Amino acid sequence: MTMTTTAEAAAPADADAAPKRSPITWVPSLYFVQGLQFFVVMLIAGLMFKNMGIANDQIARWTGVLGLAWAFKPLWSPFLEMARSKKILVVVFQFTGALSLALLALAIQLPMFFAASIAVLFLLAYSSATHDIACDGLYMASLSPKQQAAYAGWQGAFFNASKFLTLGGLLVVAGHLEKSIGVHHAWSLIFALLAVLLAALAAYNAWVLPGMLRADALPISATSVANTLREVLKDFFAKPGIGLAFLFIILFRLAEGQVQTIGPLFLIEARDKGGLGLTTEQVGGIYGTAGTAAFLVGSILGGYFTSWLGLKRAMPVLIIAMAVPNVVFWYLSVALPASLLHTGVAVSIEMAGYGFGFVGMILYIMQAVAPGKFQTAHYALGTGVMQLGFILSKTISGDIQVAMGYQSFFLWTIACGVPAFVLLFFVRIPAPERSDR
Image 1 (cartoon, rainbow, N blue to C red):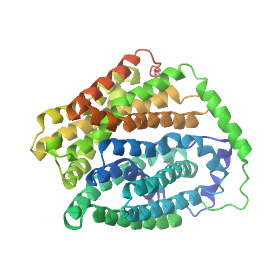
Image 2 (cartoon, rainbow, N blue to C red):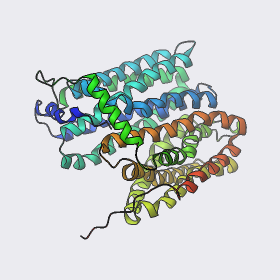
Image 3 (spheres, helix red, strand yellow):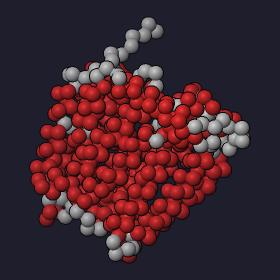
Image 4 (spheres, one colour):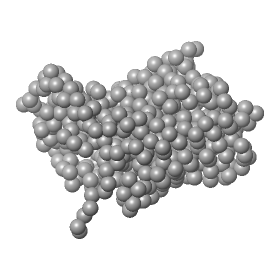
């Protein structure tokens, strides 16, 4: 989501200049692309590197660094308002993403494939994060508040549909190809196909997205944007209890970032090294089908549960739900089940708990951090802090796991959930507003 700037008043002009097309023709493709690039960097890259023999600490450290792109994107989001068309920004960064995927397919074949791949993924990560800003800005500028609400379901559905494709389809295909043409050739082919898919979607979006370059668009100076950013940041850090809020957000994700990074690697790890020894195909089948479905169901139930109780009363339960993945992976590391069904059920429970609990952080930022003069901008900053908390814990997770082993590591992640629960009694969470209706 982008920061609100003084230029936003002129933003809807992009939409007015284009032929009127139903949002159903472009919202799905827009957010499918947004999710596709994100999940390639944050999920698929780590599993690919694991199959290429890279150690867990290296995977966690470098993929964590890549994730900083999404944590820091609010800092440069206001400057994108200087562009005369959000549509042009979206299309340019989609084609940049396609080019990055093609380069990644080539980088995997190099002798120094790991360093080369990280360099290309760096380009993809910052291109994708910048695309997200333009993407959300185009969505908000092109649709009325009523339309934004009406198409929010399509937005979320197609963002997560890309997760089904990457974790389900791609991992299964990659696992099959690995057996016949080898790991490096298999993943080069996967990323080449993804590059073609993303280029095709970028071309489609260039045609269908609302917004055209306006010759009469008012220029926006970097000085005015910088002044607005300064005012937004000053107001944000002046909020009562913002320091505790920061700490709570980071601690809320302390265990999550570690277990969500190491958990999938544990599933692939050889059994003689303490893992479950699953193939890439099997992990893709579990996460891409039942796992993702369980996450969606958990998220929906978590939303209704919080709506029923109110965030203040629901938050203790939501934090406990966030501990479910840690407990499940500790159990798997002890039991080491040989049955794929057994593992699949456990991972589904893990993902359902994750989805249920994670609702709490999104609503906490919306209701306790964002409200005020610059609500949109402060929500973007809050989600940036949230992503930073995830990345910090993700980055250190590999070193901790290598030092402790899988069983002790997953016990450690359970303990990491305790500080957020304790801090819950000290942070400010607004009580739900009463309604007479």
